[in-house]
Image 1 (cartoon, rainbow, N blue to C red):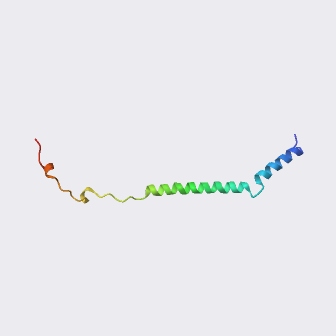
Image 2: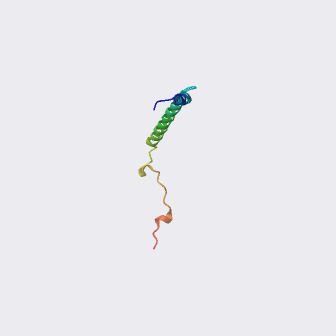
Image 3: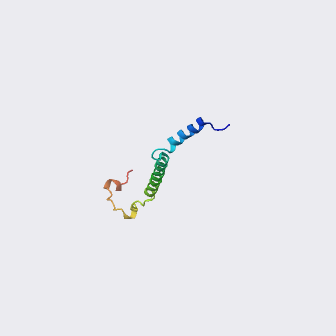
Length: 77
């Protein structure tokens, strides 16, 4: 079971399609690497947005007092 001329020709054509031209494999791997980098950057952006300190909410003691209406002061019953 050796390789005939047809087998070698077929392998050559497949290799030419995969590796020929402008380096299609390297372009595909470059695009893959860019996708991974942008994915990691997106994860880091989400993480920093989630961990960002929000403005502290004022405590009850720091709130301005509101006047109590006279109807609220009267007891019913």
